[in-house]
Image (cartoon, rainbow, N blue to C red; front, side, top):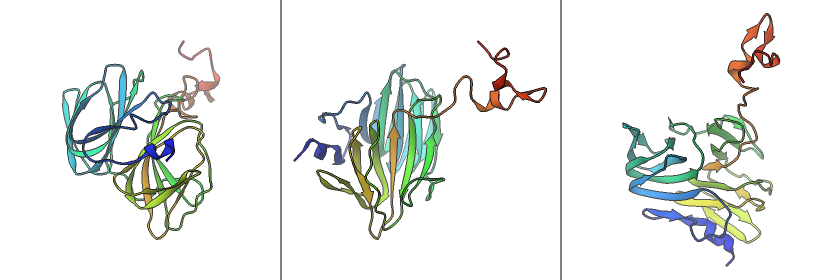
Length: 233
């Protein structure tokens, strides 16, 4: 079987995921079951709970998370209970954020009848983000590629990911790694499908010269974004 077969995995227990796959990525990916400790001062970890209940211990505080909740954690943290996926990004300092549960439908229109919700937005232009993607029954998605890696896991439902190497089942417990430039498409029959997807690089987001606080600060009828002499240097 081809290298891509290592990029669709059914996970049991606690383990590093896609470790042996020949894919260029800066992220390390883990599946935790019941307990996990990780993180460094210059790293941010994106996580989501796929089964059960867990306690996230972060920066001296404790947070109860259930299935369908998600978070980003800066630096060291511990998780006790539950199961889920962790994507650690070295050299990136994001924000400590907790949200959930994931909604049943996406907020944004996508392609081929699918929808998307941006769960964790980029802090700045180009930063990583976390999405929920929704595929209704009888979806036949157009074959496409992405300019960077996509990492994720099935939240609920069933479908397949179609590639030149064959079709790969998607169901709860399956995680996936789609390398940059890989032609693929997602398909469903009678069931809907929802997946979590991590993007390492967003092509939008706030910039120093373009963000809501600056744009909506008005000086004598003019946005401060159009007044460079006022902008912080």
